[in-house]
Length: 379
Image 1: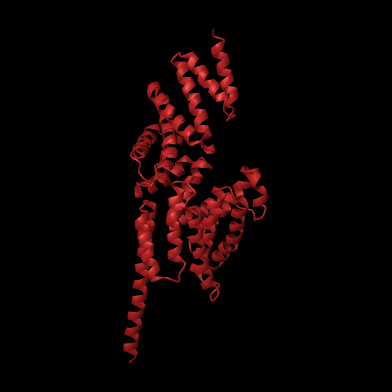
Image 2 (image 1 turned 45 degrees about the vertical axis):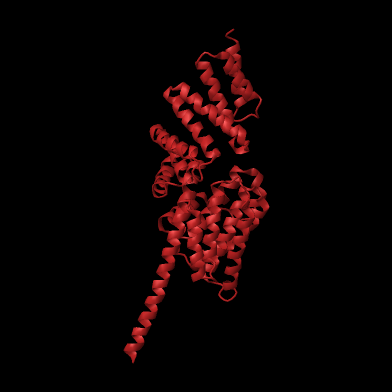
């Protein structure tokens, strides 16, 4: 009798473990589909997961994550924002239903935290600072509670790392946001970077997101091009269809002055942009053309550099996006320098005067005025 009970228990345990493995496999498939921009396949994968776990927040969180990446690759398009917030509300509702009976349930706490984090990220992109701060304030105690209850779970380190990093650098670099950051405890940039690194190396479901976040931070804020290149190379190799990973890698090589490597990747991005591949839109095309122009200028190929800079400026002027303003100013400054080198002084002055018609950027007015003076004093 005892032997029979043991066999039944073993069968039941094996069945539970098999189901857990099936769920983990399904999640891994779906996550890979997200980062490969196979959004329809990912939606289908997580629809299957909803059938298996209809009351868990897990499938609904990953379903929202698909839409998050759809938004991310076309960030200026706000048509999916409301649908995204609705999906996150479902995740929070499913989580809270579980937490009513089990306040320490890992998945419910984790995915509620994740939903609040996603909501705060999008609101900060849309510059809705107060709403973003409120989401962050609601998520922070959950992150701390999770870390206390489950200190060996490295997925939690993604949330901890993002918090520690941004809570340290935002007050220093963005004075306008200090009233919002004063609502939170102080962060620790160094600790945040280490936590993100751990999440990337040892996380179960958050590893890729942690690596992407860390690569971007190392490139944009830390200027650690060696590190951003190392991480983004791994991501781009695994997900060659993802423009975010490819772009970080190309810009990292550019920062390292490995111009041949940067050029080959930027050329590939340009080719994909011209063929209208998903995620390779006009904004990415414009910045890619700018970097290609810079590389050709360094090589002394002025005709090719001029061609790239002209097209880049045209794209960004048409897009009329504030964050691309620097590309327009610098592109025109390069076109003026090329015209001057080609001894077309009239055209050079024309470009420099067009820079003066724009808002001042990185001392651009003073530099343009000086060049105009030098050219005109030749007469």
